[in-house]
Image 1 (spheres, rainbow, N blue to C red):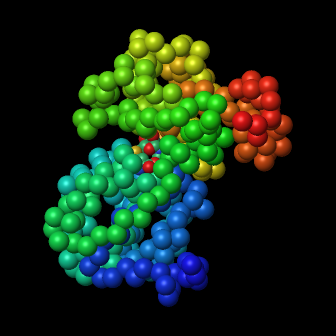
Image 2 (cartoon, rainbow, N blue to C red; image 1 turned 30 degrees about the vertical axis):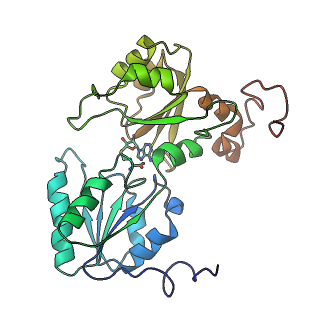
Length: 283
Ligand code: SAH
């Protein structure tokens, strides 16, 4: 396979007038954009972006109009219906439209709804996946979402439902019993109920938990705590969303894999945090 030249121009998809490309921007660090995202930024007439998209990324689309479609400074968020229909209008006006969403557009990002609306209105779309915060954000904190000694499954769960309330529709008993590692998006507001539900369902109070805020950005903060103390520790540390909360023994791996700490000159805290007692490369 021969690759086209980096990352725009001949051999790359063309963003035609009247199309909408629905694109993930990754969790924050611009380096985590895909090449398709970069190619899209270079071609767009209009970029409609969300609150979680780092604005620096827009510098790669200097030719485009930049439209903000998120919640900021206490202003009410643009309504989902309004955003979707605006995308339809822009496409019908013959614009090359780039819809940029934080992380991956199809992971708790309403990308499926937007794409469905566009297609229902006859607007052609391309989907460009992105690195989701629940995977990439944890990786920047030195937490692998799977590890052979820890888990053979991961559960991604949202701490909100459509009404913004703690998701009563979720069966936390089943999640607590069936999920070796639980990765919670939008969990900060309802962390008290969520941690209580997991404890009620039999998870241990000393189970490791990590809270990673503004992951992959210069402001990233990581709190290591436990299920029994997570609520109080978030309050004490004064942590604010956006945050990914990871529940499970995978969090222990940070003791050896905190590569950002190591970049800053810290020594690994524990070379064998899971207590294997033998080199990691052995089965
Ligand atoms: N589509 C996005 C998720 C959107 S839901 C994705 O795939 O990542 C919004 C939630 O994502 C936030 O409340 C938070 O839980 C999480 N999130 C997104 N970006 C984040 C970041 N940089 N750091 C921590 N959490 C983040």
